[in-house]
Image (tube, one colour):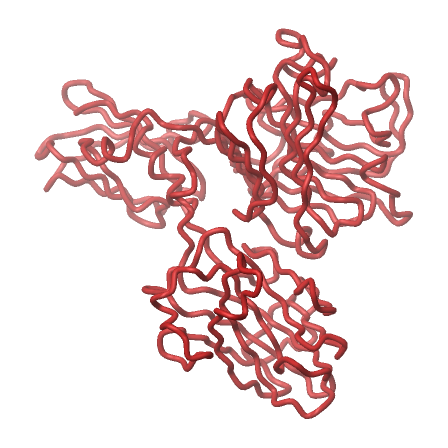
Length: 536
């Protein structure tokens, strides 16, 4: 049996992870960035308190859709990076409640779901739309089936279309100035969006899933606490960064970086806020960085997910002692996630100086503070020798050509600053707030191509796994094999022997907690193969 080490896992894992679910329960588990049509005046609020916890919907929070009648074509919408494949999965569903007292005019009570190509200047020209009636004063579950339902206009069959990448929701029709308030919950597309073909990086090379509890893993992270600008941090920020566990810790499957209002003296400087700034003890050149995070909401908090050149000569940075030869911005900076002061936009930015002066490239995507603080979103960077692209939930925010100094090794920073030039005025009511991070993952190109993987002598599925993990051997049968299961901290949690029967072994994962595990297989000749899998 040939040793395949982690190649099979690394090939399979990102393909699985990049199959994106399209859903939102408005309670922190959504994968959708909602926005109002920028040409219309309409208010909406995600994570709004459910005032009608009854019938089929007793969840605590919902989306509030508020058309006050000043927008003739009011709607809310979201985009996806790839297009829907409606040939096999063609159904969208949601729950809706329209209170009778929220209406004006005589419009029939209804909701429409429109599929559009968001890249067109006039996307409504080629859209497909399904309209469903809505009863008042009760929660209803509405299903939009683009295979079976009547759709408008009389255009090509939607199940044959491959150009839809935008979903639009409109309550009580268009071309009117009647008011309506509606509450929407549990939006779901019955398929997934395959993002695998969009990433050339298929090998997970470094990660932290934050599955333990207590202090952060110091094998992965360094607390940066030394002031970098004499008596302060950059941008006139108002906090001390500490290594205290109250400011950064792991709990319930996520990393918490917590800013606290408190008087704290360090390095002979007294400040009124504490927080944390983490440097990764891993540096790399080119790859895909993914961070799934929920952001603080209070005015004055300024969270960031970013990268700096490993060669930055910044006192107190992890890499400074051995590699710090270059000042900022000559070292380069990549900002994967930073909100603007008003928390209405997520920014993607590069800063650099390669001899021609200081430059920056910054663009943003409209966001909603209630959404980004209540729901997890994935912030990512795709970085190769030709270009760099920054995404939020696989929606492209900004891109630029890879130039010097972005052709060297960088490391990851996670921090939560307070106030200053970019955080803005701190709310008087602020006591504490938290940036919560579910995982950090770095992918690079594997040495194993897809065609080579298909000829390997070992395959395993499903991944992620809920119950049984099946391991299939191409050329080995009726043989005893030793199997060790190891957690991410290197602890052997299971040792078993199996007889390979019909070229197959099945491992029951029900006793495992959710997380990432290694499997080490040893055959009679002493050959070892190692792979990883995710337990749901």
